Amino acid sequence: MENLLDINFLIESIPAIISRLPITIGIAVGSLILSLFIGVITALIKIYRVPVLRVISSIYVSFIRGTPLLVQIYLVFYGIPKIIYYLQIQYGWLQSADVNSIPPEVYALVAFSVNLGAYLSETIRSAIESVDRGQFEAAKSIGMTPAQMMLQIIFPQALAVAIPNLGNMFISTIKDTSLVFIIGVIDIMGQAKILGSRGLAFFEVYIGVSIVYWILCIVVERLLVLIEKRARRYERGIAS
Amino acid sequence: MIKLENIHKYYGSQHVLKGIGLTVNKGEVVSILGPSGSGKSTLLRCINFLEQPTRGIVEIGDKRVDAESASKADIVTLRNSTGMVFQQYNLFKNFTVLQNVMVGLTSVKRVHKVEAKKKSLEILERVGLTNRLSHYPAQLSGGQQQRVGIARALALNPEVLLFDEPTSSLDPELVDEVLTTIKKVASEGNTMLIVTHELNFAREISDRVIFMEDGVIIEEGTPEQIFNHPKAERTKQFLGKAIRTK
Image (cartoon, rainbow over all chains, first blue to last red; front, top):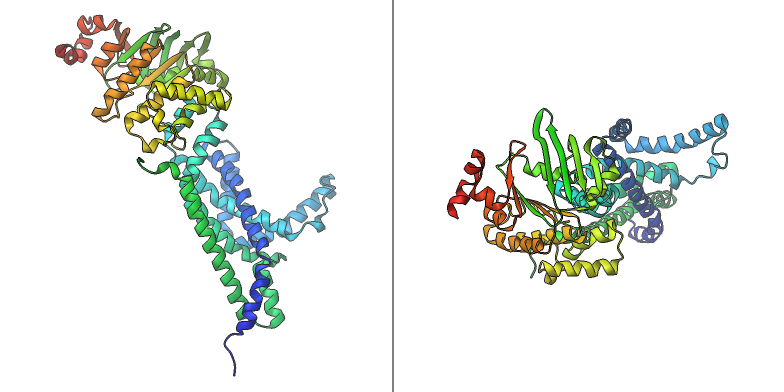
């Protein structure tokens, strides 16, 4: 009798898929951290209307939003080695870099940081601008420097506003990391493909990998709720 | 001592301060009265450059700053020697009561945490809020928030305290607790400049009263002079109600 599913193969594939989870989480979390820097810097450039940089950052945001992530991953993967090689030959720069030894995970991290950074930029800008003007004035009135004002007063309040949006984008990014297999990174998706072609059981491994993604996203959502609660702890009303 | 010389402020073509000169001596309490739109809040905010004056000189203690050539460092120096109390309180929402008062000491004045806490507790004691130390602003009444605002301004030991309509957004029954706190602060010898609509309060607390309209000082004098024997017709008109009720 022909079975719809080889359940045993599915169950056996899951531990092997999970063994690559650190790669998926590493790229997602790593690019979240790097993209927060990119997002904050481009948001500040826009808020403070920095000449020249403002134009560059809006072209960057527009380009990333207007091109597929898949194309961006290819651009980074094929573009960066070429640029480094060109700089070495033409100007003698970066001589110590060995283009061939850069692992594909690095390209994946760069591509996802650049991609997510552009999406975070607008979210962060609107969150910063949503902070009450009086908070800025009070910080200035006690003599805080712009950096102290931003780090201690404005960013924490903007973060509380932005967390739901940041969280959604982060969850999208986790799922988008399934594309990294195309440049040779063996993440959970890559592992599933390998197992699938080895056992000729693609349906089983894709069910397996989708369960792993699903559980990962549920866990992240739960964490986000806790983080949001913590970030907004000061907003709750009158206590005893 | 604080001294303003020939302060002008334009918003585009609108001339909202037309050459204000003003001196407040050490320990003096000065109230600025006037109708809405007279420029009194703008004047106050020009002192610590929350509004950049278009022209003029601000002098606080031995620091003299010309608005047209003020550097960022000059502005920070002025802000370090002033404390401001806002109409909307503007407490740092993400900080507790104690942190709100401490932050100026630890971050701006680089005072050690232990000492900053000790000093902050002393000040909170004076405004009567030591039982609310770990509350966030959202958990306090308007009156309590404003008393924290006063404590925050006091913490930096400023040369002058600037009050920008400190009771205007309070529920009527909470006004008194804040006015009482301000009176107490005044009685401790602080130099204060107060923009207010509370005429009777101004009369009671001030060493000197200034009446402003349309970006100029119409009249100034002791509360007795201004309230009981105003010279300008406009002052009489504006204060009429307060004078009659006395």
